[in-house]
Each structure stands twice: as structure tokens, then as C-alpha cells.
Length: 551
Image 1 (cartoon, rainbow, N blue to C red):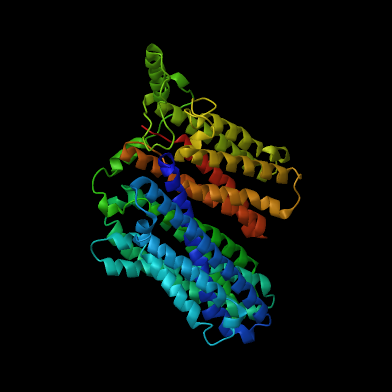
Image 2 (image 1 turned 60 degrees about the horizontal axis):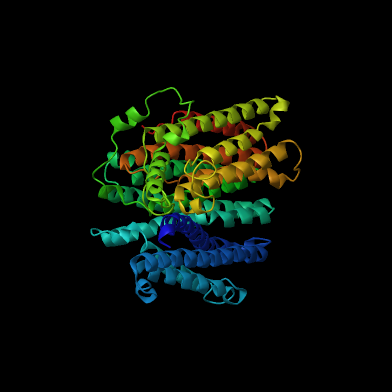
């Protein structure tokens, strides 16, 4: 179990992200039902059917919340029992376990509340709102606010307001999209659209106010934004939040035309809302990763300075030649261990044990090896973006450009982790205990999948319109997962300087994925513009990778 602590730590972030998504959808569904849909039931021709479908979506979200919370809390309990030696009852008395139990019970309690019997009774509004408030309160006690020594009550309230804003806006968007897909008359759109816009404004205001207060208490200074991992991740959240506001503004203009009785199509409303869901869920995973790092105000030493950022990102020619594998630190250490063991007639110890928590040694050749990998990956991605752009411009035979993804995946599989099979001594399956190795392999799998699907779609081998959506979805997921990417480097500043490179990579990946989604889903000029945007985002990713430095 001790050798799996690192990978369990990464899995806990993923599970926590799923908990935030399910929690927001559950609370957002309850708020959408109580404050928007049910007051309009008599005015909507398909109100009863729509209520049933949204209640079912909210019920599934509550079930997902319960399952994700059980898995996340159970994982933390198991790790604590294994590493600290506490009994199950002792660990279950910890605040995180108590709050997790309360959240699971609230999720279970919401299930009958969303059934027809209670929905038609006098407790239809009060009971789910009360349970949702209890669940939200328990969730705030698992945030950084609970551990603060000063301003504890204020920060708990602010954290609750932040999560409420996320639920009433982002968490309720799936219900809004479902409503738009089921309602087909202009009068219904005029009721639902402006009503949800008002809900969204409450959510935006809650997020802005609470986010500003948390920035003061958790970050504290401008240097805290760019000089700490916490600040960099908050900066990524802000960038995606601004993108959400732009899409929300576009939808607000549509709903205002509906409210004034002007003729307009709701297709853009639905497509922009779909992108809002994707970006919003990415923000949730970024928020989950924030739980694994301390607030910036607590890290007053070893902050990165602007000078260090400028030096690291000074222009330099890409590294196109690689050092030999036997020059790497682990290879040299293993060779020394093999030599000493042979002299004693013993079996040599392993130079690096995956998942042990011990950082592997690194030398200048390791840094050169990593930079070489990133720079050649940048060349692949730059070519992919350029060929996709030329294919978009009308060069038909370039439709085979997705095959470059397969070459890139093979390159990364061999080169990303030199201590692992096929180049290193560590076995293929054992190395999965290492967080960074697992993440690299996950990205390789994503690259293979969206390369295969996009090539099959562009060559006509897959004609189902839904198959074309695999590429943008997987690109967006890859960008989101990159926000949780870890680099185990002993120097904290080096780790943060690498984070400063990977964060814009993640943002460009998310932008590329959802721009491609709009190209496929949004008719007219908007879709055509998006079709030019996503290849440019790929080229930007390539340039960032070519700019990558570790020293």
C-alpha cells in the first residue's frame, strides 16, 4: 500500500473533481426545478414531461455524487489507515470522513425527494432545498477555509457562497440545455431563457464576490499569483471563467432578443451552453487540484520571481538531439548498483522504486532528455495544426493529418519515461504506481484515441455524426487533465516554472477542443470561425512546447 500512496493521491484529485461536478449538477438541478421550472409549469405546454426529465437528471447526479464521495472518502480512509496505522473508527472521526458521510447521506436523501410522490406534495420545494443546504455546508468544511486559523467563519461562508454560485450557474446549465432540447415553441423559449439568465447572474455575482475575497485571504499579493502553484492554478481558473463570461454574454444577448419578442434562433443558445458546461467542468477539476496545494499566503519562501520566469523563458533554439540513455542519472546509478552487487555475488537493488515517494535522481542529461521530448512533441503538434489549417483551406489530400497523432503517441510512449519499459529496467505494469508515468500513459492513450477517430471521420470510415465529437471531447479532456499534471522535481521553483509552461498548454488544449466542438455543432458563420480557431490553438500548443525549458 505504501508504494501506491502517490498514485492514490492523484486519484483522490480526480475523484474530488468528479465530486464537485456531481455536487454542482445535483444542487443546480434542485435550484432549477424549484425556482425556475415549477413556477412556469402551467405556462409550458410540455412542463410535466420536462419536469420529469430534469428530475431524473438531478437524481442521476445525486447518485453520482454519492458514489464519487464514497470512493473519494474511502480512498483517503484506506491511505490513512495504511500509512499512519490508525483504526477504521479513528479515521472515520476525522472531519473529512464525517463531512463525506454527511454528503453521502444527503445524496441518498435527495433521491426520494426527486420522485413523483414528494414532488407533488407540500414538501416539494422545502425538503430538497434543506437537504441541499446541509450537503453544501458539509462540502465547505472540506475546503481550505476549515483549516484556517484566522477569519475561519468568514471564509467558510465565502467558500459556501462560491460553491453555491457554481451550482446555480454551471451546475444548472445541463438542465437548461435539456429544457431547450425539449421545448420547441418560441413562447417557451422566452420564459426559460430569460429566467435562466437571471439565475446565471446570481451565480456569476456569487462567484466574483467570493473569488475576490478568497484571493485576498488565500493569495494576498500579486507575487502570490505568479510565484506559487496555488496562484498559477487560480490564474488558470480566472482565464476559463472569463471565457465562460464571454459565452454567457453571447447567450444573454439571445435571451434579451427573445424577451423583447424578436425573432431569433436558439441553436446558438444551446451550443454556447454546451461549451459552458465543458469549460465549467474543467474549472471544477482545476478547483479539485487546488486542494492538493497550500494557499499562496502560506508559502512565503521559495517563490518564483519575475526575473526567474524571464530567464527560464528566454528565447533559445529547440533541442533536437538527445543524450544517450546510459548517461541518465538512474541508468548510471543502476549501473553502479549492478557493479557493486556483482562484486559481492548478490542481486542488485533497484535504483528507482515506482510509487515509493522517493524522488528519482536527475542530472543535466535528464533535463536535456526531457527538453528533447517536449521540443519534438512541439514539432509534431505544430505540424498537426498547420496541416489541419491547410486542409481547412481546401487542400483535400491533407485529410490524413490525424495519422501524425499516432507517430507522436509512439514517440511519447518510448521516450516519456526512460526508466520504464521499453527503454528502462522497470516493468510495464509496475511503473503504473508512479503518478507521472501513469499520467504520461493516459495522455498517450488519449492521443491514440482522438487520432484514430479523427482520421476515420475525415476519411469517411466513420459516418456517424457523433463519432466526429470524440476528437473535441478527448482534446478537451486532455487539456483538463493537464491541469492536474504533476512533475516530481526536488526543486520547488523548478516544479513551478514547469507548471507555468503546462498551464497555458492546458488552456490552449481546452480552447482547441471546444472550438472544434463549435465547428461541428454550430451552423453558420460562428461554426466557420471556430473551424479556423482550433488549428491555430494547436499551433500555439506546438510553439509553447518548442519554448519549453527545464534549466
